[in-house]
Length: 303
Length: 218
Image (tube, rainbow over the protein chains, first blue to last red):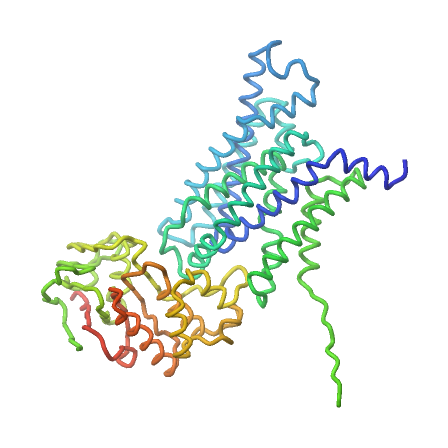
């Protein structure tokens, strides 16, 4: 098989992952844009770590339930890989990921608004470190969980099953719909929070969507993809403060679509290249390129 | 008509008052009293100026009316919902994480009230050129002018609580801002405003009264 036909063959195998990756990355970037303006970037680290812990707990519970199920267990008839994938992709890890992310959010909100605001960044990093320690303790309960721990941190797009990729893709598409529908309200809230300060309580709808997307992304694609998707393109492109917001969002969309797709394809072409880091680096390169625009010299004619 | 009143103010509360306070005294989070107790009311279509020395608690009083500062004694009553209160705080953090033009900022409010935007353009408080400028490149005064218009544009706003809204404005912009504010109050839509100011030249010419806060003597 030629290189091209091999690539097309791979693309046909990973078609749903190829479609889901940019959709989820775009939804994350649009959410990250708001989080950045609302001063919640550091808080997102805590929430993401909380979600990772929740997903791990969900997998641990799945392991426990399946081991008690014995031969009648749901995954017992499958081979190891499928069994592992089913443990990760079940509803329980997503729900627990969302639940612990929600609790981490409430905790970090308390830490952010304590009386001495200068303590907030250090307090948030303390919360992150504690949640990270708890995640490692949870993972050490079983050798099976230690494998999942690595997947939760660094992710692997190539191991997503069609069912997982499709469900994540549909949920990302719906999230993008919500982001489009409430675009003006959420942008207004972000602007007011950034410039006027916390004088108005923002609606819960945005927070819920952010928590859901973070949990979904951590469960399927890992912490690296999630944080990269949330902040790389929005923060790099924000260096162009001379742009209109519309132009900024257009560049953001292009950077995500081009960067994530090319990053994923590159990881298919070079199998030693890990998928999630390739996508993250692809988005960073595309964002960097879109910072610049070709300067066209205007010709002056003398009549 | 302009009436200057000293605290504690004894005014007959209007039956349809939007805001009524009785023996209200703001405190610091540590429970120390800030200003002498006040009795005061604000009716629809009224424009009041809030004055007093630095640190007396003008911003704190506005935050009490918004429910953002729970440290006070006495009573206050407001017949409006939170969405009907418009607050423009003093801008201390003008930086934004991402780019946006001043026109896009204005468009974040519902664009139904084109009359107000037209009036602001007519008074040259905002100009088409200004609306094209990026937020990051605008001066403090240009941002303040835009934020004032944005506050007045907020849909359903009945009570304007503006904390030093004329900061950074030059003489011409200040005059235009006064005119726009008074035009909005006098439009007959029942909008009322309480604005804090420091200097005499910042006070609009046609106000209903001044609410002066006095520091508690140590």
